[in-house]
Image 1 (cartoon, rainbow, N blue to C red):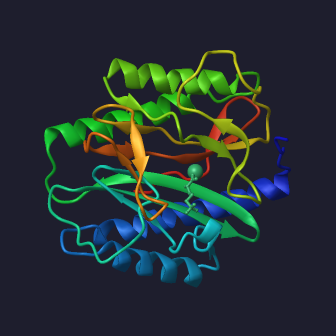
Image 2: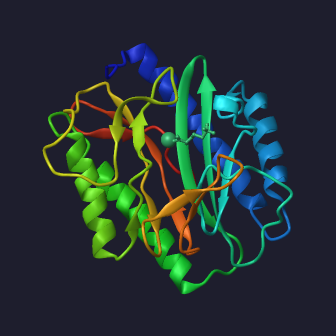
Length: 250
Ligand code: MF3
Ligand code: CO
């Protein structure tokens, strides 16, 4: 069942989303060569608690941290560790934060120091693929319109589209109906209605779309070892379009 949020709930989701945006902005200056992903995780945890938020990933199905930190060929669900970031790395920081019972979820990929033109290309076009998907959000459109827009954009730019993982509805739970795949056909899937909230999250690879899970049972990596990027926003369906609940703050 796809839940429709009322004005009250939307206001709380806006606050949850805003806290996600604030936490990303707070972390950004720390994302430099030499910091460990565990140190980033601790900064995020303290910041979220200070702002009356709940780090929703921590303990979710046993996940051991506040952030998912996925470096280079890690696609999603990287576990913060004593690994130090190096110049030339890319790192995706993905977080879900609860506020008064409602969840906000956003991921984006950051560069560490100077990165290669190929990594830049991957980051730029993965973020643009997300916005191509977001542009399809309005009442009457279908989930498949979003999926198709993301897939077409990714294909045009020769990026591998991960099919095993997808976006999702969100509300009081981090994962609600519907699934929001990054591939599909226009006009297919559930119809969007005002008051729905969904997370759109293309995960695109510089190489092939194939992935595997590491022995830690969380970290997903690309098969070919080439880098992967991931951008995600929490999106409200409005009367005539959409509102991004997790906007990037300058
Ligand atoms: N942002 C991720 C998602 O969209 C969060 C899940 S990570 C977990 O699904 F650690 F909480 F599992
Ligand atoms: Co998500």
